[in-house]
Length: 357
Image (tube, rainbow, N blue to C red; front, side):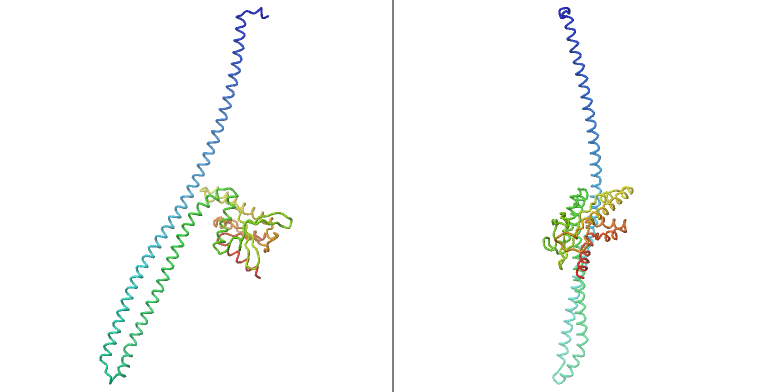
């Protein structure tokens, strides 16, 4: 057969085979290019979605930042007004003090001049008579001078109280302004973080309140203590407060605030309503989880049946009890007291009094 075909025929066959191979290669290359194009288009769509999400987050952060800027501006205006009032009060006090001192000096001089004139006109023969007359003349003046001195002292006392009150209020506003700026940043980061980040932030706020109230970490309260219950199950309460009479109070601070963050930052009423419903559900779910842990039965602590569930953001606490009026009573039925930064110390004092009796 090889001999039957001529050279030209073999060349044609080889060329045909090469053409067929090139055709197959071209088809495979085209399929690869199509697959790469589809993969590229898919990645491009994902990147666009990620970019849109980032744009929404940036707008939310800008909205939050503007709100805190407005609050900061209002606090600065109030501080400026109080400083102006303080300066005006100090100036008026200084002027009044100068006038009172001048009046007192003038009355003292008049008193001395009158006494000198009377003594000069008196003689030894009428010494007793002049003494009686002198007392009669000077008594009203002395009473007037004593009354004037009392008025001066009372005036200075009131001015001192006003200065102290204004100075104290300005200092508190300055501290509040600084604290708001710090807590605004911490709150934004915490609410946008994961559950672990929120839990750590809530524990930090809780420890800060206890420290500011005079309690000491490692003495009057402890954090993250590893304990076991009757079933030998290991649990780790966020904080245990040791009461003076030997009692202990367990405090949990891990409630999630992700839904509340969406409610707070949204301008859409439907979104806000849905987020608030999710916030209430999250609070109730956490209540249920706490009631199942039976922290008060842990070995090594001496506790009443009640534990405290701490919500570190005051508006989140207030909105929860405002939108769910039965929340507090339902929690108490499960031996749980829901507390916030403003009610924590009151709750501890109440439990302390219950423990005493």
